[in-house]
Image (tube, rainbow over all chains, first blue to last red; front, side, top):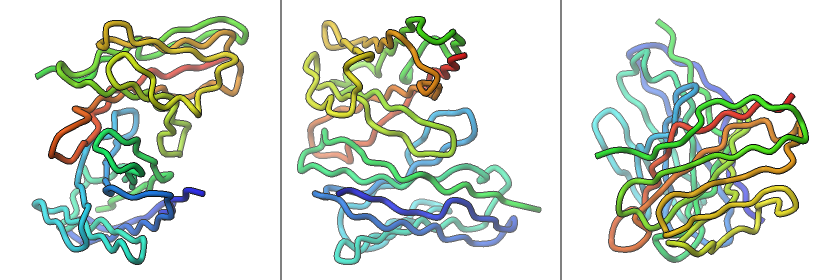
Length: 112
Length: 116
């Protein structure tokens, strides 16, 4: 079967660092995505990992370990506007047009 | 560049009524997706198109849901008749689909359906 697990909710303080974990079991693997979704809005792309290691993009970094079926999204210098749902998604086919399978999302609340 | 456009943004109907959602993808994106998102959950794929062809509709409830993508551009998703459990946000997304790139999906703002 296919399964993507991430915590339902997390709380962090403005200015701090938070790590959101994601574990997956899928029939195939061709990339892992992180999306941000503010309430009532469309998911927006944050990061993409297809090889093991860390990808850094400003305050956001994403890590992948394919052997462990594990990824995390690291958010630094948290701001109030980072309060949102963070969706982990795996592309399960060996072509760029493969569908994304999403986790349930992690609702992050950033408090002053 | 215009993003993915969906309409209507909100729709309230009574059960057993029909409803249709429309999506205009980003220009040049040949892959189009319809996802369903329930409150507090991640999006779930309903159907994926490569140009005009539905290449993955395994999770589309075909007894009441239908979709089409005429001319490989705009798409419509229809529910007839709607049931209470269909209340959700219907997200449309598009991607380039081929080539050496991440293949990220670009989402529209969604159509929020409430069935009474």
